[in-house]
Image (tube, rainbow, N blue to C red; front, side, top):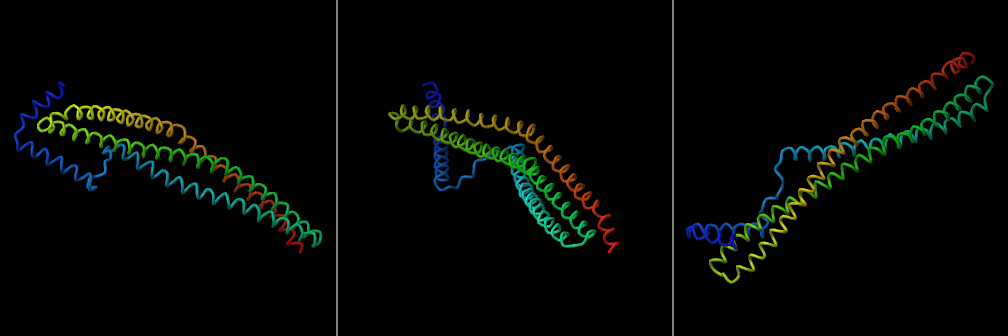
Length: 262
């Protein structure tokens, strides 16, 4: 009742021209809502905008990395299978040749099969130690994106309720001038709307707090996990490249000797 009395005092201090302008503003606002002319309600926070940009860009880059990791994994598997087939063919070829050449082909086949096993093993390591962590990282980023969407919806709902409350307050002022018998009902609607608005505000604050916690956890844990994954990936590729080079290099003297003999 005190709020109503203060509203009553406030409204009667307004000039008729002020009241007419106030009602015109309300009418314009309602028209914008009905016709969809309202600007979308979004947070105007530079730091939050930077964070959203970072998350969306990170998802794009991670998805690209995941795609190429899969291609590399597929290439390792295919190369391993090809080397296995080549090794078997070389051994069969060696069985058809004389002692020196036959032995050289046999060793070439055995070495190819050994490299095939290493490539298959490296493909499995790549899957477990790199592609899977990248997938997990992408899922974590997508979880943050879901929270960003929830935060945007909660903020929009909060703003819409704030605007609706303003309209209800203006409607109360208008009813006190024209329909005092309906003031009690309007006051009850306003109280219910205020309670809903407070609940939505609490929900928005909870989402913001949860999102901040997710970001901290993401930066502390997932970023470190990805550093390790990329480091292990580089070491694995270097180890595989050296192993392949050493294997072929060890064959060169025998193949050259065989060539000189022939």
